[in-house]
Image (tube, rainbow, N blue to C red; front, side):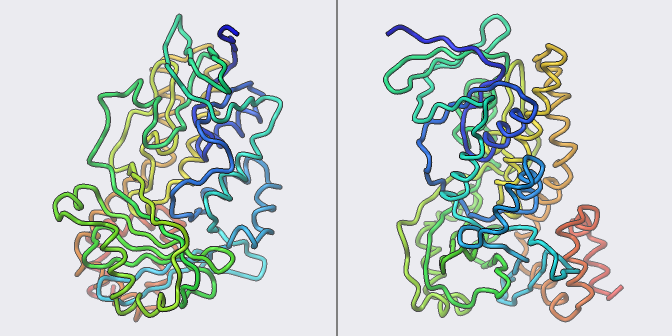
Length: 418
């Protein structure tokens, strides 16, 4: 059989959260598109498994019934009501996500294994507008006569897929990013994460708070413990790559050492069991602005380096950027304009208008984590002051308040109780 030729309105490479987010909204706009995915679902993705309120927001916009399905399925999705920060001195600070929670309040975030969540999203991509090729290999991407042509192999057959735009939703090793931005790798923005699944971890918060332990030996990174359904927990560490190189850190050894020896952590793992192997992955942090598009292409999620530099969470930004990419495609179709200049205005500028301040503040907070005395100082003060705890809690939902965390005047006021 010869090469099979297909034409569509958009090509999405990757069917994870960024690709699913793009597909959801293209289907809402009734825009035909083809998704090319190298794996076969269900498939695992190494991740912290925590989903922020931004994840819930995008899913609700795509289809409110999907969010209701998630919130009603506590066997697969665990609602999370807050975050526990553990300072380098070992003192813990609980920060609820909802300061004024009532019995009718829905949990703003949740935790779920990526194997489960990505398969949930994948199933929701089913639509008359969406054609999906799983277990497909991209052989080449070329720009020809104002369009993009993708050569791929699927089930032994060769295809040539053509569209006016391609969306790179294929993670930190994106073939789309490599094709169009081969000179823009931004290595200093990368961190490395390790993930392990444990059963039997004790001392988890009654309201399923996610935990970030800022251990002195890991700053400006941290060790996390995220509760999961069915008595499981996602346990991992994330540290800047340059820190690993500078200190010659063996990340796996350091994580296991903390689990075995840290006085606050070790007793909780006394009877815990490691399930499956410890796995690692790269974290393309949004430490600085990136080019997100060009002639006939856009990048989303990890391919666009949109992981939050402070929390390390990338699922919400992946879904959100996919939603914005679909909106830009709709505009590009109306204007018959897929040029770099148009897509920069319709996509890049919108992404950074919506997410830029948040990412900038998170980058500043990540840098502040290099100073353990400062972290200890804030946690000690907040531990004694309910009003300060409430202020910090509000900072996780109000970006104007969150910005105060990056200003010296905030710490001056704490110091003098003003």
